Amino acid sequence: MKIKLSELQNFDTQTRAAINEAAVQEYADAMTASVQFPPIVVFHDSANYWVADGFHRILASRRIGAINIEADVKSGTRIDAIKFGLGANISHGVRRTNEDKARAAQIALKEFPTLSSRELAKICGVSATFIESFRAVAKPNSTANGCQLKRTGADGKARKMPSRSRPATEPAPEPVAKPTTEPENPGVRTLTEERAELSASEPECPTPETVDVVDGWLHVFETQAAEMAKRYPDRRSYIGDRLGEIGSELKTSK
Image (cartoon, rainbow, N blue to C red):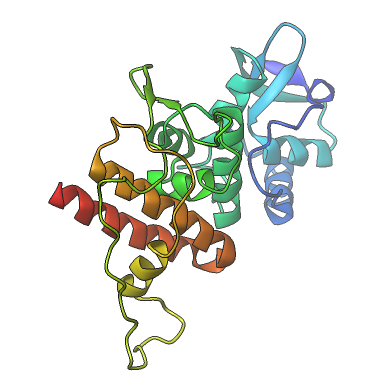
């Protein structure tokens, strides 16, 4: 159906980091040449239209002076529009940048803090490790001690999460010496170096007695990886990969 562009005023459901002006102009030129575009997706809550997908098409339509736009109108709220928009451009439209993916992860954690990282990864079209790298530095939905209590999985059940501290029964690891020779790729940290730094300090949250030793260690490394990601934002992807390797080794040894 067609709806008036004037009714689409609220853009706070935009999940991209920024509008691509070149794409808007390209779309506008194509529309002027009578190229047909797929309908935008909006959610209507009986009072407002919430745009979920099609921001570039809306701006392009306004640029050429259009009054109406073809839309797929679904029943729902602002939250429904945001959830749809987080994964709207995974396979079509203007290609997502790394900044777009990062903003999607941050919005997902803010709007759906109790969902598991795997569920948020499915919604945003990224990896669970990518979500975790942002979860660890975001303000968690927590107790007074700052420990995440529950997350909701795909089955809708909320489960307690282990605290991010070293299990009391697990001995501290032996310190790992850094290589004395210059690495082949200067500036690239080795897995050994990452492990050494991840093990350097202890989180303060208490450990529930039911926490599995291996899971406890994994959360220790996740917490420290998050701190490293804050200090080295340009290395976030590399840190995530290293954390994945450590997690795989821990689970193999379990």
